Image (cartoon, rainbow, N blue to C red; front, side, top):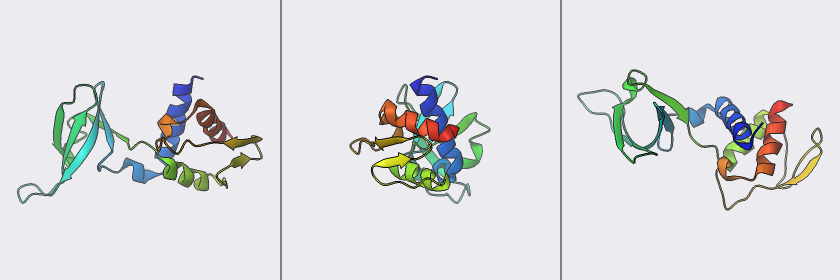
Amino acid sequence: MTHEEKLKAVTEDIRRELPELMKLEKGCILKYDDDFIEICKKLPKTSKYNDNFYQGFSYDDNCGHWFYENQIEDLGYKIIGKEPMLNDVIDWFYLKGIYFSFSMYNSQIKKEHIKWDFSKPYLKDQSEEFINFLYELLEK
């Protein structure tokens, strides 16, 4: 499996295990056709429509998208979720029954000193070694 495929599998499992990453709020990513849109603002409900209104921007063309929450599926958007961060990975470890210190060790995998680069808070920006470690946990 490639690094990208392992990262995708781990990210999808973290999003599945942590439903708060799928909440429609700032930072949530949507897919529309072949484009990805990140929600940047949730606007207050209006008296005309009793539903949340969202503003997002496309990654590809920086184009704006505006929609009501109840329109998302009808308009063809798919909720992808937020990008997992360090705290999400720690929560995921807890749900998997994995206990760690900042020098992580898993007796089943027998790897020590897998390091999270704290200058990069998002999972997607971590080393291939770290992603491989998480993928091995996912496969156990």
